[in-house]
Image (cartoon, rainbow, N blue to C red):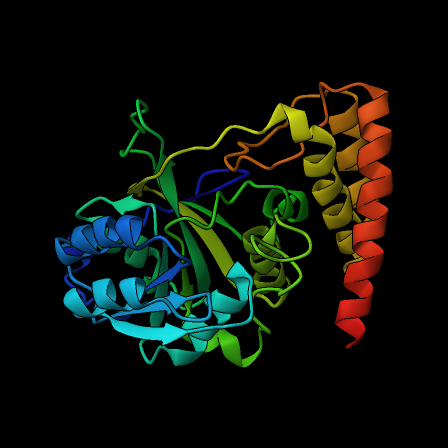
Length: 312
């Protein structure tokens, strides 16, 4: 295993350690996409090792077609009527009884050994979150790369965690026991919420701030379509980013200077010193100041609305 800022001991594979893998629940959050869900569940049925439990969280009023697909594949089916991916993920975390909860998007296809590689870093008792490597169509990832680990003791840990250095939520896993001190995914963030980005990055940051570690496992491959940013809606996408930045400024006062330095570098087009793997929407680096201004105003309004939701 290596850190984002220098080499560390490489974690042996699960087979080399000869230690049993932790128990795991595969959680698929879905909404009105039974066809995609069926493909995902087909892939999960072929995993080696298999998950100890499979849980489908239907983030709708309930859909007979979705329930039928889940039942046909032997998965537990639960309805989370309150809209929002973060709420659905939190429901999955609460309903799971295994040591690890592994999330997979309903339109993603995990490789056969996804669980083996996503679970291996949890041999470290301080590891709370591990992200998979997302492989879009036509792209082949380097599966031989070492696991990259991050803690709050590493330089630049805050910007790495908050702005995508730990990858995307597709195919990630979290330690169930961390939920005793971690409040879970922020319901104001993620698809279906007010601020539609950043829930997995925010979660990683919270876990690191609590003293846990997080990592990216390049050999844990998940195939997933990568949706391009809609340039016609760049200001709206940028508003989500500005609202997310304001939320971070508010919730992490001890890192405000880190945030300001990072944002200044990005707006000036300075290159990053670490690998940014997530496709953070609303990347305004190459856009004009007019779009940036619209995004800033829209983001401020979204942030104020999110504060009201938090107060309730």
